[in-house]
Length: 251
Figure 1 (tube, rainbow, N blue to C red):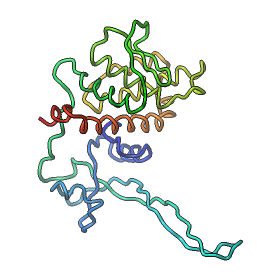
Figure 2 (cartoon, rainbow, N blue to C red; figure 1 turned 90 degrees about the horizontal axis):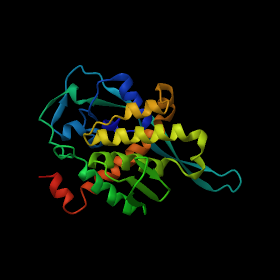
Figure 3 (cartoon, rainbow, N blue to C red; figure 1 turned 60 degrees about the vertical axis):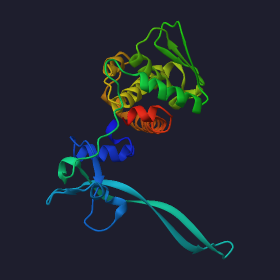
Figure 4 (cartoon, one colour; figure 1 turned 180 degrees about the vertical axis):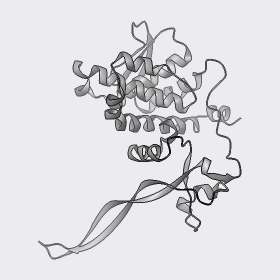
């Protein structure tokens, strides 16, 4: 899921149903349609005979009609969806892709993610403090507390987990009967976000402790996908805009 964070939940499912091993997809057409010619812009070309992966693309429309009450002409606007086709990188040939920024440091890592999250906290008017805790962290709707003494990676993953709570779980959803679902959702988001930046967590173990299973994860998948996408996009924007961080990433 972390590889397809720019796609909607429904399109992620469509991609993975048709190409379970897909890793990087983009549009391609022989015609000069720049909007969907991502592979051509990268000087890569889909091999002859390759079958496209169908996804749904939103399109807008305007329709004029006469208002039954006033007799005046009004314009109705709406959205409809049509099938478009994308192709996985394994279906293409051409020039190598540009190298992505190096997101992680050597060793335990996590320091750079902490820096991104600190900026993100300021943007969200969220206070992050470190103190003696029994749990790894807590989310207090505007205040995140972290346990003292964690490794940088542990702190980064806990920040992802607690920010997921901040985004997904307003006060009315923080009830005793929802606790296990809330923890499952937050840890799944943390797993996707950290995976995107190149880190592997032991989240499956944590999720299992909260009775997470395939059915429960599928039921929450859209919320998990949307929240993970929001965090990933925000952190990447921060990484490319904060002075000093961008220089480190692009060395």
